[in-house]
Each structure stands twice: as C-alpha cells, then as structure tokens.
Image (cartoon, rainbow, N blue to C red; front, side):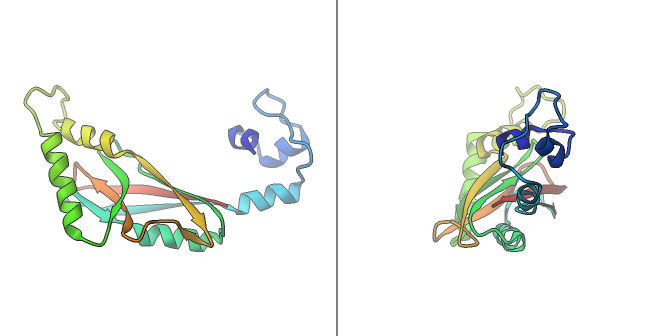
Length: 173
C-alpha cells in the first residue's frame, strides 16, 4: 500500500494492472480491483472551517469523533492537520478550561512579541507558537473511537486571528 500512496496522477486501477510504469510504483502482486476499491472506501478526508478570535484554543474533539464515525472505521488512524503557519493542532486536557488559559499564557511568556523580530507581517510570535504546538496530531482509532485519555481533547490553536481557518481530518482504516 505504500506504493499506492506515492502514486500521484494515476488511478489506483492503473497501479493495479501495471499500465502505470513511470517508475513511481509497480503493481503489487495479489491486489485486486475490489481490494483497491475497499481501500479507497476506508480512507476518508473531511475538511472543516472555523472562525477564530484573536488567540485561542478551540475544542474540535466532537468533529474528530464525527469524522471517525462517518468513516465507518473500526480500527486505524485519524490524522488532524492544520494547513496554516500561525495556527496549530494539539491534544491536551479538556476537563478544566483553565488548562487552555494556562497554555496560552505560557506560550505568550515563552514567545513574546519582540521589536527585534524582522518578519514584515509582525506576527513572528504566532509563527513560533505554531512551530512549538505543531500542525498535526495522529490518533489511534480502536472499536470505532479515538483512543484519547480520560481528560484529553483535540484543540485547534489560533495565534494570529481573527480569521476563518481550515483544518482537515483524515481517517484511515
């Protein structure tokens, strides 16, 4: 399946029957067109938009659970990805709202806005926070549910709002 995921412009069927011989991938022995269709149906991508304030963490755990449920995946992986350079995604406690406030406070202290920053847009601190938080998380899916700790939730973190942001959830089963 690694070869299939690397194939850019051809269809999975072309990979299967060997017509695609551009050197990217070769057909995989024993894979049928039905198997390829089954794989295609088990990989689901959903895209979401979120209107954010100036700075904040938004609990998107329910969107993650919904995407997993809609995919029908019983066991696999769920990847949540943020395609922005001044916003990120993380997993943290969702039982006490003060944890999110403390997280933002700590990031502000660790990455204050500085006059020495040279980036013309004036949002270097937001870029630093995003680099620290990261742009994606991967969650194990088992029994049709994300494996998260008792107090864990998935958060979209905005550091340069207000904006309308996107994030993507890919479920692979």
